[in-house]
Image (cartoon, rainbow, N blue to C red; front, side, top):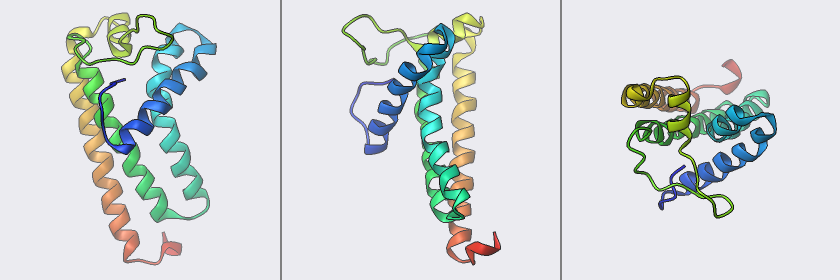
Amino acid sequence: MRATEGTFLDRVDLIAHEAGHLLFGFFGEFLMVIGGTLGQLLVPAGIAVYFALRKEFFSASVVFFWFGQNMFNIAAYVKDAAAMELPLVSMGGGDSIHDWNWLLLKFNVLAWDKVIGNCVYGLGVLIVTVSVALGFYLSFSDAEEF
């Protein structure tokens, strides 16, 4: 994950990302590496599900926006997999690995890092667009009808 300054959400995403590495690290190397991205996505997804179960759909749509915003950061990380130019957070003072370099190398698709990153970015655009449209719709309708 990037260690550069960012928005408030970027900082929260970074904490969730690093926590994901720690939590998923108990289940082996692969899940430890992908766990950062999973943690980054599971935090807003879990909060969105919480709101949806409480029938607080507008709140869920706002958190769904956060989920989509995460895709932009993930896309930048994926697109950097071959170049490995982004500064990374080092846990424990040792050398850190580039999650997406490791993952794409493992599946022999490192040459496709830009294409995969662009697909993740496009998915983020779709999610953000749907969340804004849903929030707009819910602002002008009775939430119980949804």
